[in-house]
Image (cartoon, rainbow, N blue to C red; front, side, top):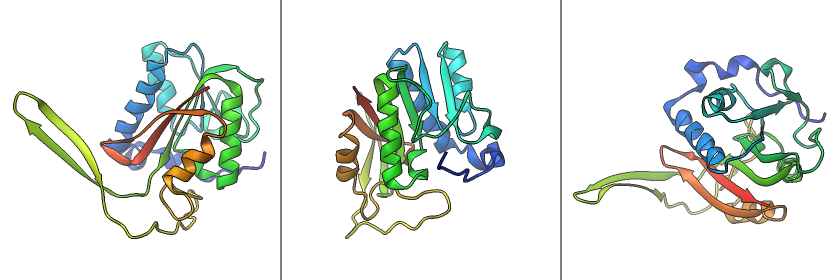
Length: 207
């Protein structure tokens, strides 16, 4: 396999990895999967394994794949050459994973995800465009939570930090261009940023 392990299992220690913002993203991960009512799910790059552990509470069958055997995945293999036949899983997902591959390889991995999925592909990616978050309460109508993008003259240049090769809304990776590239393989159903963690942008695709 061509990919290499970037971090060891200690990277996912609760005290350093599981922030409240990341917990909010995990809620959305589970919510998007559950809404699709799948019988069989593949998660690529499970990290600490929280999604699979929590999925058991909700009677979901999630299998995991990673290149690092220390993380205890169900399947050991490369995201760019998934060791499965076509149309095996109802839903295939990768959360905050594709940016750990060079951009062209991340597109190869996404194409592989589409290949082994029968219905849907769910991913989340880092979105570097900073926002202001506002929460307003209107009597009789309730609370409104929304994000406003901060003005910026141009997209910043991304520098490889040992983990991320690219991020959405960095120079060369504008959101509309990334969506265009991904949509070559599968139809985009929706995309949104997590209110509690705007750095994480979700995409739900449908075959």
